[in-house]
Figure 1: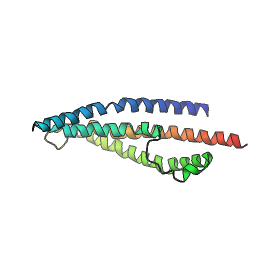
Figure 2: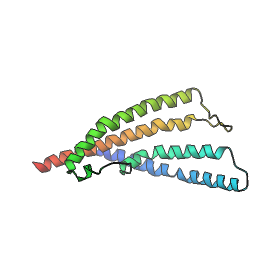
Figure 3: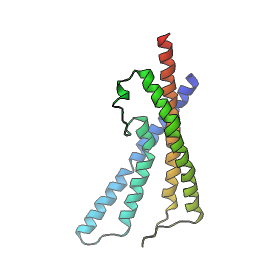
Length: 171
């Protein structure tokens, strides 16, 4: 079990690092929004800032999702499960990961790779007047899914560890 916990710690460190690094995408996003507001005040709005701010926000939102999973910041409904014993909570968590989380992530990863590959294949550009390339931002989709897959594996390892430790305590 120690080897698995070491793997889990490495995945957690990766998610922590990428979450911190990707959180800095908020700086250019904020600067873009401020720039757009100022240009609108002078009746000189730009075509590109809205689309670029969507790219930054989308990348930020997806790339920090594994960090959010690591720190349990995603929405959960633990009204009832929070009152259960730790072992029961771990069993429920494991069931949810295996039958809901991982199937969703695998579908997201499969279609995300296809979606991004198709975009790269045709050198897809935006329909707007500015027309930036879309393939880089669409590549973020399968990257985010892969990062969530890794962090999900780490969470399952930690959940199994809770079950193993609880089993040792009850004997």
